[in-house]
Length: 200
Image (cartoon, rainbow, N blue to C red; front, side, top):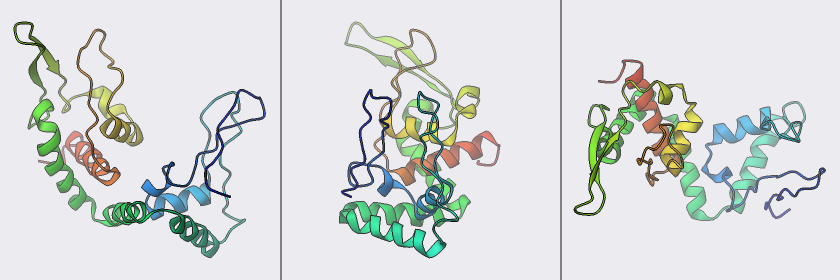
């Protein structure tokens, strides 16, 4: 009733249920994402409780009722959370080319310093004076590994940074870029267009 969800325990009949309030991530989703989640449900990742996903409510709740649930959730969020959700919804409604242009601008400001203005990758000098060494930051333009990632994984790396690197012994770690969800979405869209040869 308090939207706090439930932590999983090691009991076989217990499962994690994510919170929907301030400590959760629902307020970071667009209206379309919230509606799709309620209609279609969410499949749980493979685990010891593979059947414990969020069930679909299409057929049990009509469109108006799903809208009412979303409106109720929004009333429980703080104003900054509601404002963020409105911005995310508005950004998702922009034409793809406008969002990609926004992503290109963000890339130039936040990403080019490491990955290069043309996604070509750069060599950086790191370390204390006298102990500096060169670190090659990977190019993104022809990065097959990055291109094979899902949009969700790319967004997660952009927003949260990278804890591990696929190249053994690499000293480079992707930092937390401190961007919003809609900014991360725009960056992903821009990268996809570059990889498809659409963006300049």
